[in-house]
Amino acid sequence: MQQITSNDVSNNSLVALLFHQHAQAILIYLHRYISSKEDADDILVEVFLAALENRTLLTLSDDQQRSWLKKVAHNKAIDYRRSAAFRLKAPLIRLPICFQTMSAMLLNRLSCGMKMRLNFAKG
Image (cartoon, rainbow, N blue to C red; front, side, top):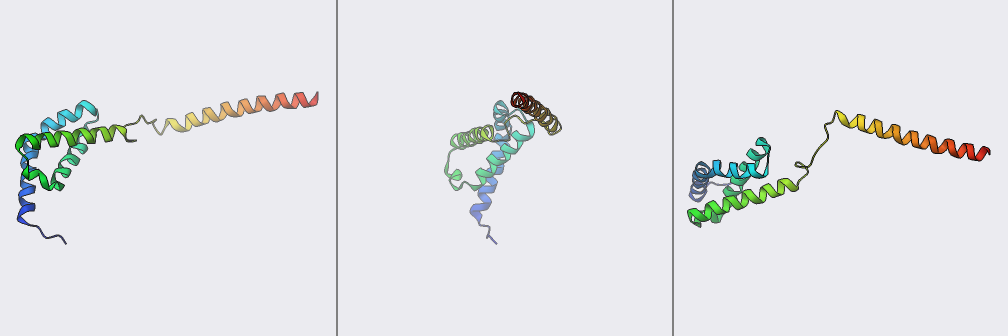
């Protein structure tokens, strides 16, 4: 079990203060890149979790802290857009229909090719 020190408490207090001051602006910033409200909220939480883990955040000035938070938000938004979660997904209901249609088309082409070969072989 990890022992909580006064430094941890002050870091948590700082992050809570930073969240109170900057969360809304960072969320608006994230919405520029991410249209899903839920995904933007998740990334906002990740930004402030990263702030909790950063020991040097206490030593930065207010402007540097704000810049750091925006940079982390920007990087996490880019990571999200690169991830599979952002890529277009087909609804699961439509997948079997697509596969059935493709299978039928392939079987039809194979059948036509086989018929032509059989007719050619028969002479």
